[in-house]
Every structure is written in structure tokens, then in C-alpha cells.
Image (tube, rainbow, N blue to C red; front, side, top):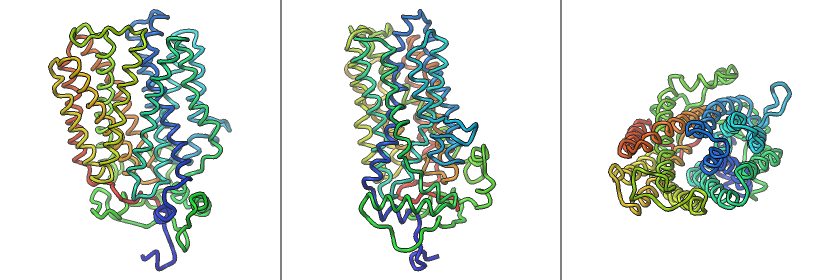
Amino acid sequence: MDYKAAGLYTLDEALETVGFGKFQGFVLGYAGLGWFAEAMEIMILSFIGQAVKSEWQLSSGQESLLSTIVFAGMLLGANTWGLLSDNYGRRHAWLWIDFWKGFLTISMVTFGAGLLSTFSPNYLTLVVLRGLVGFGLGGSSVFLSWFLEFIPASNRGMWMVVFSTFWTFGSIFEAALAWIVMPRLNWRWVLAFSAVPSFALLILYGVAPESPRYLCMKGNTSDALRILEKIASVNQTKLPPGVLVSGRSNDKDEESAPSENTAPLLPSLSKSTTQSKSGFSSFFMLFSSKLIRTTLLLWVLFFGDSFSYYGIILLTSKLSSGQSTCFPSLQSNINPQDDGLYLNAFITSMAELPGLLLSAILVDRVGRKQSMAIMFGLAFIFLSPLLIQQPAVLTTCLLFGARMNAMGTFTVASIYSPELYPTSVRTTGAGVASAIGRIGGMVCPLVAVGLVNECHQTAAVALFLVAIVVSIVCIQLFPYDTKGRELSDTS
């Protein structure tokens, strides 16, 4: 059907016409603050773990549990918030008012549990509260999908990379915060200050609009149009002439999608399916005949990506902390209480900035698949020399390069996953894939750190290299790239 001739236009045509302007800038700021807060809360235990261990005389296993419980909470939270988002709306995933007439928000859970952690009287209380923080952080995929649905397809990849910089800046800010606060106050103050971004999200919730794509998918085009009119007004542009329609129908199988960049990413699901979908059925739709291949490949990709990414961070932390007794030439004179430890963490986090720049250059030029393959390959090249012991300076440079590219692949994978799913299951699909990645983050300390502590550097690095190779194979098995394609909607 010729929509233009019929005086009709779709949501994607409307977004292209209004362009990326001040309105999307606000959406970017709000969603980015969500990722900024998540990065701070995840990185925090890299700095306070040793202090907590000393104060409460914890074992190494108890110290590791403080990190693992956060990932476990994120695993549960990612599934919960994704299902809420796809069934009740992007905003209602943040403000859940459909059950018990109560207020349960991602920001409220994260902020409340994070702030209460400051007053933990004992180890068990801290573990429980950090698990609740992880549950709140599991909603990060909602922020990503929400922002994604406001961006024109033509430069979606570049703006999603810009969005990902909030994670890196959150990591850098947390290192700077610990550097300033820990020597002067204590770990409780670091926890308190780290909860502030989540509080800001809670305060600003009321001005965050619902996703017009989600509204169109639900058939609520009148509300979607009002939001589009507001976008056009703020951006000082105009909507296309005609009437907004929910979207185009398409019966082709997404696993054999055509190569034209104008084709939708996935076929729309039927209206009857949409109307019958409720609760956890959106999760089971990920295993339908049309989506199961994409779902399983994404799971393996995110597991391998997270395992190698966090493994590189842990290796860097181990070798820069001066605590290794296995590699004398790599030891430093840094005392965990000295400023130098925080300075090392600060500099290491800076490695992610060139990784983001590289991903921004590649993602809309060579596509999502090849961008990930290239950067995974570079990470493999940087890590391979560490199969044997290297001089301290060279080791630092190699780990810097490996983390740079690992961050780049992680960024593009986070862009690629929500683009592969239709709006009706987008947040659930991306959230579950991200949750599987959290399992990689949970397993990595138990396996890789154990090997490093037992002086098996070669085995640890070999594991990271295997994860990278498996991830590259998975990338090649994805049926198509999403560069320049319209997001798929449910009619």
C-alpha cells in the first residue's frame, strides 16, 4: 500500500521528519541517568569491598558474595521489569500501579535499598539490601528500549552509542567519588552518595513521556500523536501531512529478512496475538518459531561478552592493585588505602572512552554484526600475549586495549538486541538477554578470579579468549544486520 498517496504516515516516517532535537535530548538525559546510576552501583563494590571485609572480618567468599548478590538481583529484576514494560508500558515499568495500588519503581527500589545499605548493622543486612539494589538495576533495559523508540532509524546507532557513554561516565564518576570520599570518610558515605542519581530519576519521573511506539503497538494512536506533536513543537519542526497509522503489515519471516535497509526488522505479530498476550506470555513468545534462533544467539553472545568484559576488568584490578603474589614483576607498591589505587581504577575506566568512540565510528558504517566482530577480534589480539607473563607496562597497555574493545562490543550488543525484537516483546527480549549476561558476570569472579588467585594466569586468559571466539561465531550466525532498518511494531 502506498501510504503517502493515501495521506497516511507511520511512526518511523514521523520520527525521521521531526529529527533528533531538544526533545530527544531530554529523553537521552533521563535514560542516560538511569545507566549512569547503574554503573555507579555496580562499580561501587570494587572500592568498598576491602573496607567492609576488614570492618566485619569477612572471608574472601563473603566479600565476593556482595558482588554476586547484585548480579543475582539484576537477573531477577531484568525479567520482572521487562515483562512489566512490555505489558503495561515503558513508564509503568518505572511506576507500577497495577498491583496492590502501591508504588514500586525501579528508581525507588534502587534508591531506597541503596540508601538503606548505608545503615546496614551487619553483613547479612548488607547482602539482602545489595540484592534489592540489583533487582532495581535489572530495569536498565527499560531505559535503553525507551530511548531507542524515540530515535530516527537513520542515525539510531550513533545516538545509542552516545547513550552508552553514560555507563562509562558513571564508572569514572564512581572511581572519582571513592577516591575523594574513602580516605576522608568511610564506605557508608560512598554508598549514600552513590544512591543520589537514582533519587534524581525518581524526582524527574513525572515529566518522562510514554513511548509513542509502544502506544501505537497498543493501537492508541491518539495518545501517540499527542506525544509526536509535542516532539515536533519542542524540536521546532512539523509532522508529515496526513494521518498517523500504527504501522505496516508484513508477513515475511524475520529469519530470512531481505537485505534492503528500508525493510522492518521483524514482522509484526498478529493483532489477535497482541490482544491475547498478557503477563508472562511475552516471555514465552521469545521462544516462538520466528524468534527462538535470535533469542538463543543473543543469550550466548551476552554471556560471552559479559564474561570477557568483567574478566578483563577483574584482571586489570588484580594486576593494578599490587596484591598479586604470582607475578612479582607486575606488582606495584600501591597500598589499598593510598590514593594510587583509586587513581589506577580511574585511569582504567578511561579505557572505555576510546572504545565508545570506535563503536560510534563503526556501528552505522559497517553495521552491528561486523562492528562487534571487528572489536571482538581486536580484543582477542590484545589479550593473546597475556597467555604468558609480560612486562608490567606492556601488560597494562594490553589490558587497556582489551577493555577498550570489550566495551565497544558490549555497547553495540546492547544496541543490537532491542533492535532485533518487535515492540511487543522488545524490553522483555533485551532484558532477558542482558540478564543472561549478568550470569556471565556472576560466573566470571568464581572461575576467573579463582584461577588468578591460584597463579593460573594462562588458564584464566585462555577462558576469556574462548568466550570471545564463541561470541564471534554467534555474531556470524545472526540472520541479518539491523543497520538503517525500521523498528518492528505489532499491528
